[in-house]
Image (cartoon, rainbow, N blue to C red; front, side, top):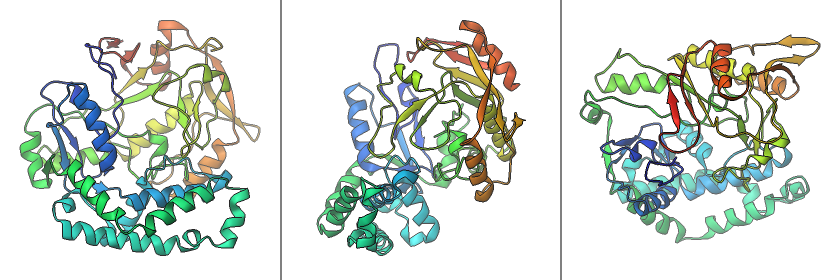
Length: 405
């Protein structure tokens, strides 16, 4: 994201609204907060002249600890060739433990009470230590798996060092509290005053194909990507039933970071480098491909099933075109001698169904159709999806977009 003054920033822990004067950015109750990453990002924003005082955090937001992160990296390394594609930040571990037992959930509000925060961290450390005991102890059966999981010894050594460091927890808790406590904190009862009657923009995280209940399992995130949470927040703020306009956002050249099926992946598109998306030691390769109407249709259907439905389309990156690009898109799949234009939609949370979809997507062959080139591509793609085109972007800088195209 680049503002009119040329200031550039890639948002991670904060919302993009901080670039707009007078706008507050809420990290909501379902947000998973990485305090040290937040501190780093806020320093970068301060250097750009963007004050963090408009950043608001809900007390219910889950906090990711070093134990979550180490466990995440250790489990992912142990999967070897079967990696899920995790970014290695501990998101899934924090979300999973919170579902297992509320006592294993460290919340943003807990950081204001050191006694509570320390008790939560002790419980998290003990629970994950028990689960990971064979790996932390260097069990010979796990060590032999290093041939298939070359990153396992290093991940296990880092985790053992963390669990053995008596001072690490105290040091992290001090840094985490310093990063979060200066922020304005709110609870459900404060949302009515915070939201008021002003316009609201709810910024989604991840893509629908990574949704915990609708994505291509197991290459998913531990969060709900659809807009279902939006309705709940509006209800709490006294704005139930308010009209929403949901914009589905797609890239002109689809991408996937890490493992998972990608039917239209094209190695030739590696000629489209992105400074903010590079290969990582935990997440793996940053991969790019060509437009896929089948997956786009599935994402739209999943949003509609869980609500709210997608009302219009935003297509980004129209300025980027690799030399070897072809004017085509995937109109359907060829699988088992059949043409498949729509992936079947199951019940939200049916992981057996989602796993079957993942296996299916891994073995299909794209059926290509010619696509318009240049400026004609975006409206044609939107029409093929049956959505009005809301906005197209021709670069990262504000002003390089076209509305109502």
